[in-house]
Length: 318
Image (cartoon, rainbow, N blue to C red):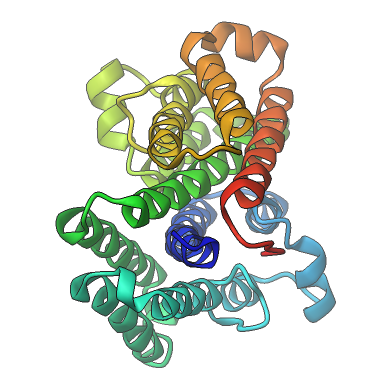
């Protein structure tokens, strides 16, 4: 396969997954902002949302004040923000258009229709009236794209590059969400202590719901929600679809399918990262420091993406 074609396929998948992840993180921020809490804590939640995507500086350049409306506009509809839902869905569609011949009609139409429908959704007032419903729509369109890909694409190199892009992006997003939200929980421990228990329940429930894991948590643990178990579920459970380990399962498997003469070191790096998640325990991770662990994981995921670009794709600064 031509490297440029592989590049478009991988980034098509990364952008649709990135749009879904942005919708998930915005939704959990909206939900947690509704919990009774001091104004400064609510503002920290919105700043954390920007911090997840490394966009605080870019936001501050455009807006004088941080308000929920400004953050939503910036993260949803701003064409000058490359990580906004608008920009991600546009980029997914443009990458799909560039490799139209490699996709089934259903896959192309799912991306194209999503982009066309987005224009209506951004002008019908849904985001302002019911942001959670808008975010559900974004997630639904991502689910549709992924399901149509699995259900209609030939299991060839094009398919494997699409899957690789999906799970690279998912691993990065889940790690960022965990890092920022656990840091936010630690910051909030010393504020409004009388309401901590109730706040913690809604806070961690919202985070679990943001990655479609609330029902899974109840099924696996059948007990009270604790930060340690949330971390274990979203990091080390291979049977949890959006966990770090499940994402790395897919990265390793799809790398194996597209391997070439240059990719042995890339496969080795992915294998080491995968093995670390397989054999680490949550107690050891927490004892060593969750933030440091996730920081190292994000650095390795970034390096893995760079190596994949070097081994398989055209040079990209995306």
